[in-house]
Image (tube, rainbow, N blue to C red; front, top):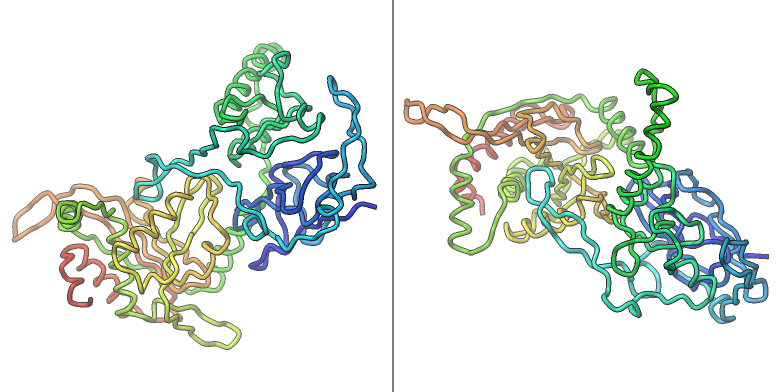
Length: 468
């Protein structure tokens, strides 16, 4: 009887997850803490390690399927219960060797990848230019060891047949016997949405890694072959309705925003601000220190200082006890548009950081923004949110407060406009700040005081010196 690996408690009240991709197949030999499945919860995409070693007997669930905590993900057979591998075209029917008795009999304390007893095998990340709100960001590029021996080596004839494409296999056709490595969740999802498993392709990346271009090329081939047939049968029905399931992150965001609108009596104020001096200060910092400070990082510094001046805005409402909970620490949330949707990673302890530390913490969040692979701990505990929606090309927004916080500050696009300076028209860089606050927590005087404080710091960054 195989041992059952059930979906563990993912923490933070999460009770379900979507299977993104299986990293093993029935008949594979696995060791304790080996990643066996990638799942997407409302918080993040994670790889789950098996608490058992042995031979994979059965998998439960297909990619795209929702599973709940406690449900069986897979079963693992002991050494004496090794199963035969299902027939695979071109692969001899060879029984899979059993795992060692020590590996099969021991249990793991691992729950999520990185919590176990083995060193992380996640590839390094490199950074290239991109967009994260209104600040410079990264495009996720995975780097693999040049030496193939640095990767886990297959020990069985069957595993080798699965992982190593041969010259006789066409590289543009998915092969069910192939198990090419696929790192990017975006690549897996793109393939799944188009009806195939990315790991069945022969990757052109290092160590047969399947790249985005491999999936795109195969989709183009499918489209080219299917287009004449579709045109011959009937034109596409562009009026057909499409049903899109609300799952994973979208489901969590929907629930939080609905709660915010239902519970919070919000009010919105806004203010146009001359940001010309802010850009001058940024350039001066570069000239003096040789270090780059983004405009968003500087505004984040002003926001943290403003919350120390108006601490009521760094609060939440405890509806059960009918109390306002004013937080001592400023945990600054940064709204980010990722490939998974809108997420709000948090800079914890922002109140105790210097401007340089705040900038570096922001850059660390940026590194994870393209694919939304933030650790769960980075998506909880926020006390105030900063949203740079100017990167979307808009000036203002009556944003929805990130429940259970009490306020959110939005930054619009920064553009040159006519502005009155010393009773004369001048061309200045102007930005609109939009402030949404919980009217249960404070009145307009407090919210306006905070907004005008941040505005003064933007118009004249030296203002901040008085509060340091």
